[in-house]
Length: 138
Image (cartoon, rainbow, N blue to C red; front, top):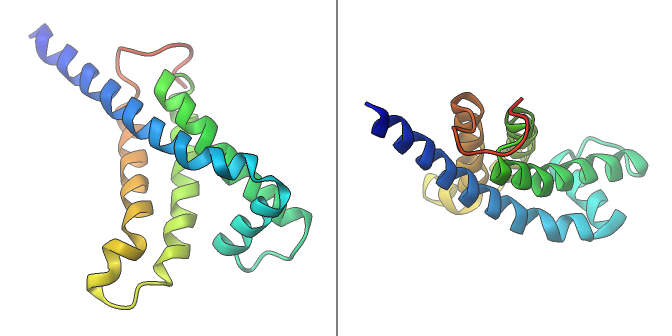
């Protein structure tokens, strides 16, 4: 049944473009925010890091992961590398947001978004990019 295969591939394309676009939108302000923004990102997500260049480096890595990971998701190239970077970034973001959860009803508001993106990134990692992609797939 060839139609079913194309349907799955088209579904993966829609998911990749949609989620990749959201990562682009979230990653762009972080990427252009400069060293001060990158340091604050790392201090929020990884508060045990010492102040200084290491925080800037980790914050930059998170911004690059979101922006270029989103772009690679849209294109379908280097798919598993992009998803792996996004899984790590979203795991750190979820862990950081989890501290703000005070009740079960506040979970979705406080920590739901990074958890949802973590789940989608893991699923896309295992599903692969599908048939509609540009460039390398690893």
